[in-house]
Image 1: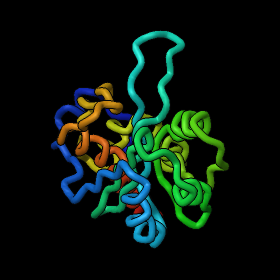
Image 2: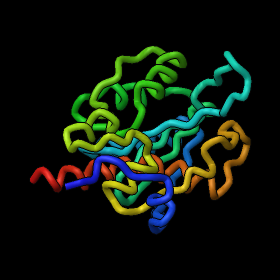
Image 3: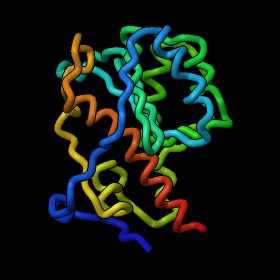
Image 4: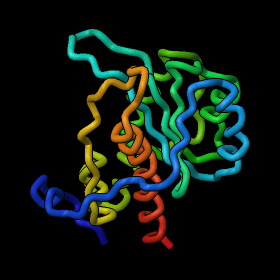
Length: 192
């Protein structure tokens, strides 16, 4: 079915993949309220967050960005600018919409430090891939094993609190949520 592990060298030899579709960068509550009806129509979403990196022990910044994606649309929510509207809290609480991500314990712990909510409907690929005897836990290696393609992590430690996000940051952020959904869908096809 799938190999259980993959080396960095094997990953480096794979073709690069990134999200190429439309990205909606949302930094106001009004902008979010225009998009939430379409987001709420989805049954499964890719999910990730970005936080300004800290290079000092004990310094942790609040979540800067929440990424949500379908296979053909990505929404980047600048929660450091727009805050957490009740409709966003409702989405994060809803069991009916599956939100697929990787390493969600850290993301959700950080989000819950920013505001109080009860996470619902989250699936962490790090746990899910165990049923397929995949031992790797990183997104780059999981993409290599499940999709046979590699993703770039070059923007991972960039400044997500910056006034303007670069095109490279936008593509990176959208790709992280989108690739989680692609991996999940590929694993699901193996089960059917």
